[in-house]
Image: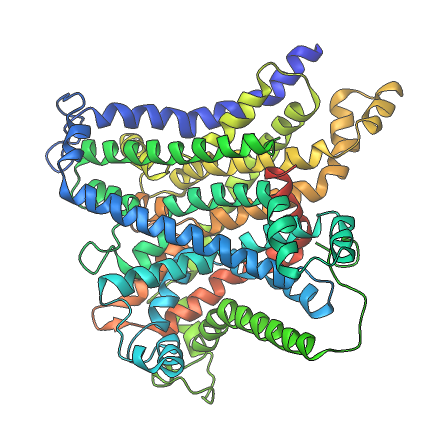
Amino acid sequence: MSNRAYKYALLTPAILLIALTTVYPLIQSFWISLHSWDLTRSINIESFVGLDNYIRAFSDTQFWNSVLVTLIFTASTVIATIVLGFCVALLLSKEKKHLSFLRAILIIPFALSPALVGYSWRFMLNPDYGLFDRIIGFLIPPLSDVVWLGSPTTSMIALVSVVVWIWLPFMSLMLISGLMGLPEEVFEAAAVDGASKWAILTKITVPMMKPILLIATILMTMFTLKAFDPVVTLTQGGPGTSTEVLNFLIYKTGFRYFDMGYSAALGYILAIITVGFVVFYMRSLNKGGGWN
Amino acid sequence: MNASTSPGTKTHARHPLKPKKVFGAIFENIAVLLVVIFLFLPIFWITLTAFKDNQDVYSISLLFHATLENFKTIFSSSFQLGNFYINSLIVVAFTLLITIPISVLASYSLSRYIIPGKQYIMFGILATQFIPLIVNVIPFFIIFRNWGVLDTTLALIIVNLGHTVPYAIWLTKGFIDRIPIDVEEAALIDGASRLRILWSVLLPLAKPGIITATVFCFVITWNEFMFALILTNREAVTLPVALSYFIGEEGVQWNLMSAAGVTFILPAVIFMLIVRKQFVQGMTSGSVK
């Protein structure tokens, strides 16, 4: 076989598989989004309505509520994970035996199923017998009567905490390996010059870590916009619609109300938002020259 | 990740202890302790709960009579966790059996050959993962219903391939990129065929990367929840979805759910610990160079 044929022969199965399992359904989904289709009425695709489903979203209060919820949820989760992850990375990136052990087991939470994590937190936040509820009440007495999953604000705090919990170890590990890869000499030179710890952190460490921080932010935004398991297992979008992120609204519209066309259209809107975010970040990353 | 081989940490030469330093060290240790509590207490608590009986479940005391009863119950005929376990194993095994060879071949090609528009291909492969997967569930639901394979493990294997293959390609390509090309050239001069080189020269060298990709794909497939929730309802239910079966009308049987949870996460945790070093390297080399 010639070299030329050979390289494409190796690549084709993968491309074909991705095309069939991702690209093809994506096109199908767009086609469905242009139709009005109630699955309880008909099992076959119904009337073509053009962009009606997309237009409908703009006058749908549930949709706008969901957009707002998604923004709050995503912004808080991403900021909290990156900031905390960076702090954890600074704490754990030193050459000490117990820290090296901690770094090693930090991967364990990442292996856990987000669905189980959601249920577990529901258990631990239970106002009657939940461990975390007791601990929080003990540490901060005014919070002892809070029913965490019972009100919109606290429910959102709980959901954000759980998603931060899920991703913090992985993001920390990524940032740790970034920190440990920074050239030693720069820090030594700064220390010789008598720079304060704070100055070293803000003037050297953070700027040098910028590409990795940006990639971590891109990944984290993608992961958060896709978050589904924790919402289903922890809050079910509630109370009311206070934690109903777009991903969950799409699921509800499609598989509880069986409004397939509208659900697909909402999916596309979420896809556009996600791609928009990623492109925006990638651009800032390219300015720094960090992407490949 | 290994402490002894990594250069750039910022420990300074030891000075006589100043009060400020002691304070800083105490503060640091407390911070580390808080991180550990936050990340590991939930896991510890669920593990404990798995061994509690129906009464102790509602107490936060550490003193309780440990029992294995929950584990017996979940595998009994009333819960049949064994069936869900088998479903999960089938889905993971077949997904990996298809994903890994296909991805390794593709990343070899992308790593070693000049392919027009390679950057775009790589970006396109990753871009498929930007799309929220929920968008694809609707067409899959329809397609599988038409084929009559809703609620089968086959359906889950097909949808899982859509997100394991792109990740596996990115992971293994990062590793293959770092293997010096000279090794292959030497073998080529000795007259070995391309396939022969790939099999007996490159594969052993790329092993850490392939293991990393396998574990990563194992974990995402093993934990996959959304597709399983929507595309199965009785026959092909996998472990993450089966957890909801412990939520009944009279409340949640937390000790049973915890026991199921522990047996469910155990394989993933063990695999993760075995390959953690390569895993973190691989994950970062895929995105950062």
